[in-house]
Image (cartoon, rainbow, N blue to C red; front, side, top):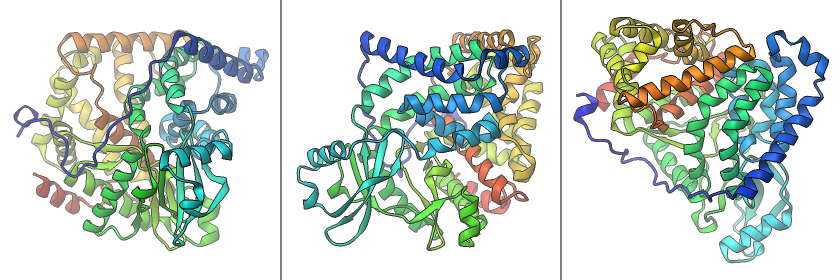
Length: 488
């Protein structure tokens, strides 16, 4: 069966989601926020020093020099920028270890929200006083994330819970930032020649699509209930999902089971607790493929801040605000790609045909390849990173391979990060985008499923390099073959 023969439907196991419509920012709010963003970047980057910037080769600020002021600027700006910082923190394969290590604080640090405001939101949303629900409510947050804060509390019946509360005014802030981020990142590329700007651009469209869903915490409550049931059905006994309490939750408040643990990449904590993350990560990845292939749903944001090594020996998966849902066509493509990597020759032809269908004939023209060369290129790009051990692969190279080839075909050195070359590559990408759209491709309709799948692979690469260096992501071919056969 080909994508043209099947309807595009959402999976029946997917939790229902209703993204909150973001407000339209006014010109005044855009102007004010734009000035604030410009001031934050100017303040932080001015501390680098003009002389140091002039010493940077071809205008490029090296990651070691760029990372700290960029992270401080993101933290000054909060909200949407902190959310983006989480992607940088969890993807060293794409952004480099210097950037990712520096942005680690973005996984669990955001501006404080006064307790009085938190209390007012909870009482207004639940329609009762705090004491009517909680025997104890810790005034100090245990988490200050990008769009919400989390407090520990105890229900009247003694159960320990975590209470997640959306930041006041976050919808307006996010809507404004999304309108300003693209020109700001382009300015960053022009100003510093930073290679990071190009990688950020790749994430921005998908980021726009996902964040509206996170603005309604009822979506997250339904997701947790769904995945708790799937964990039981699939016998994933090492993976824990918090139990939500809908009677104490609303659009802006989520009360859930408290999971006691520490971040999966806290290597000091791993040693101190004598934990062995390897079997936990193995089951987590196994469960990801089971849910994605069998049910077409998966946790869409497994960065290190959302994975906890629990004191009871399990791995806890928290923050279910982003859930990946594959329609029939996207699911078909994923299954054909896995079948191809597992040795089915015809599947490689299907994968290539789908790429051309999605992006139009312009992709071959842009890369200077005919169909046969394109098929070999795609195979050489995908096959190694899924079959070689984590310690030998780089998902960043796979993600950048197309851009490298496009640049080469147009006489541009991809490794040249001078301002002139960065801007030339950005303009080239936009021209290719237009060519694909004009030729009938679907490149203008950014597919959320592809975006989220790619992001999870980047995250898994990090955990694999930490704890499973000698194992590939497709470590059990027979298990995957059986899974694909079941899903057929």
